[in-house]
Amino acid sequence: MPSLRDITTWQPLLRLLHAAHADTLSAPGGHVAGQIGPGGWSVPLPYRPPQPGRSALVSDNQEDAIGLIVEALKKDGSDGLSFVVEAASAPGRVRLHLIEPSSSVEPGVATAHPGTLLLADGALPEPVRRLPEPVPGAAPAASADVDLLRRTLRERLPDAVGASEEELAAAEARLGVTLPPELRALYQVVRGRYEDWEDLRDPYDTIGCELFPLSEAYIADAASREVLWQFGAMDAVETGPEHAVQQLVGSPGWIVFGDSGGGDRIAVDLTPGPDGHLGQVIIIGHEGNIGAGLVADSLTDMVVHGHFDGRPVPKVERPPLVAYVNRVSLPSIEAAAHPGLEVLSIGVWEKEPLSLAPVFDLPRLRTLSAYPGTLADPCEISRLTHLEYLELPPAEWRVLLDAGAVPTGLLAAGIDAHRQRDNPLHMIALANEILTLFGRPQITGITVLEGVAF
Image 1 (cartoon, rainbow, N blue to C red):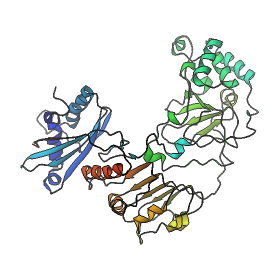
Image 2 (cartoon, rainbow, N blue to C red):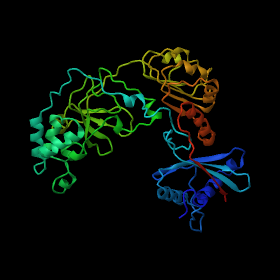
Image 3 (cartoon, rainbow, N blue to C red):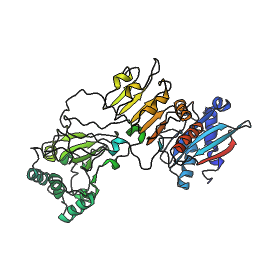
Image 4 (cartoon, helix red, strand yellow):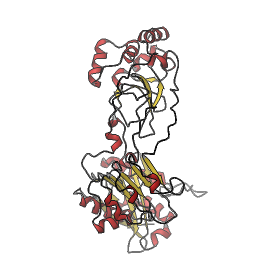
């Protein structure tokens, strides 16, 4: 089988790309880019069924063409790479650039352009760093009743096998936390091992979730929830007096013991919000980056009484910690500015470019994202002294770099490149300038191959 860096491995895909983008690849500076990994890919190809009257060939079938590359990736032990195709100098030939991942770059999402630039070792977005706030006086709900819970489980699951004291002690040592009384009672009745289900009716209907074996219960701290910089930097943790659950990325007090059946985790909460209860049951969504919802005030409430919908959260109007200034949201930066503002996103704007002066002295403003042409003077960004994350289009980055005005306290940065218009190779050159400024390793893993396009 040809290797990953053999042009023949890529030849079927190059033919398909040239057929789909002949005009682009024949124009000066034209390029086509994509991303391929063992588990998925983003390649700009339309679906084309085979011509009537003949069998489909590898050159017709994009899944087969990409499959050759995926097999080569697996053989090479690669997690994936990006590619850029450009027209070569000779007619009918193309130049292929293979771009390997870099330790200084967080992978982009379905794009060949550089992802987030990591400008400091081990730096994490602020919401990921946030720990739960103490809530003095937090106590179990009145509905929590360990004896009733244990008795009800034994009545409904008479053949269940419970965890031994040794197994419970081992789980507590592994988790680094004492199991709360209700969760301990649950596992004392049904330990949740998969081999037990052969002789026991699945306890989903009894418990209200897919129960994890005691050995698979885990702490849903922030590290257990992968949050990319480009998303985490745009979020903010906001827990008000009306919240039963602290709206964190994760907490050392969230003990996951089950699943909703759809990928959402079910946990007992030992770090409740101001309006919550110690030991309440929460659901941690698998699609979001932050926060959790209340399921029930206690395990007893969920298992015995069948309560799964939590309680409504009162709507409280506050100045937003994350502000969006664009043609349909906030009408100005002045309207967004307040001392608690953490994230400012400037989107599609059809009026005169904006000055950042209203947010110069805000003590908590850590993220700025701006669309092309929305800033009257990009160099004003240097006045935002608390920035940790900055996302700008290439032209605005060029202004900052040429003026020596890139904020020195940045932990991460994003280049908001247009997927079709901006050549990823040019964006890599720009990214390397920014990385060099912060003393970070450059993006250097680029292999150039040349071959026929058809």
